[in-house]
Length: 335
Image (cartoon, rainbow, N blue to C red; front, side):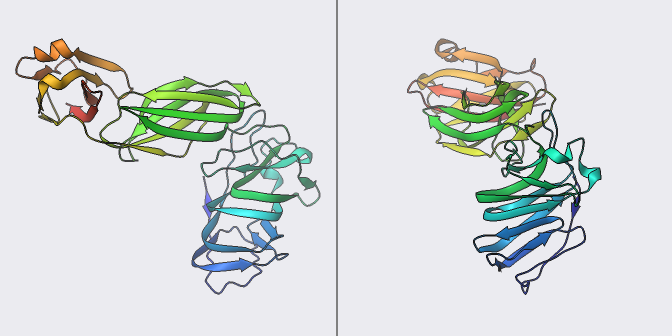
């Protein structure tokens, strides 16, 4: 995606007009836009009916489109860095070359969430074909992202909510959608640092729906400490969007250490009380169980070691369960 930049200082007046490719950037100081005044940001115009105060915010112009069905958006998206509640008139000028196959006479605004998951077109927009301009009056609209597409088109799945809660030693995830078109699958991704994400499961999407659909997933091997979860919402054509991240914290259970880590062949496990252990499980990065030992097998462990020579190289999650249900999970790396 391409970005164009423009910077406004703290002495910006109430009326801002920019005729070149631009970006609105306000850092630290605030900009008050009075009711009835208009701010122009590279083809986007905002005329609030209620005064708004912009503090530490940005509006970026992206020269790209959002994939949709049956039509994608035009090749113009505005991304707002921090949510901007807005009541008033929104206008957008575009170039005919940006229509991206959309019927200009049927253009409608489509508003997106922070993660660029868009709602269906509003069907309230007015189009000026002579000046290649679209406008609409909105009430209490949260502005995260703005684009336009043909009336009746659907951009990616609209996620209503996404929650994650701890239930004993498991993470229970639930989410719902209000509209789906061409949706394929939800990938559930897990991370402990917010940088490296691992798919731990999949849930098949409904595909086509204009009513609320609810989904759930249980992650049975969270790690001790913070666990981060997000959804990757994939359409049949391979396009996708991510949900917001949800976090769950699990307290430590069995006092467990292991060495060496990374491991080449044999992994030695030291536990404070082997008699209290009920189950030992190893899962790979895809969430597939690749090894499991029950209470009786654990008592007969020779030298409290596990042979990992046959395991492919990569990261694994080792989870020990106490008889009281407490689970401690740790990462191991196999050379």
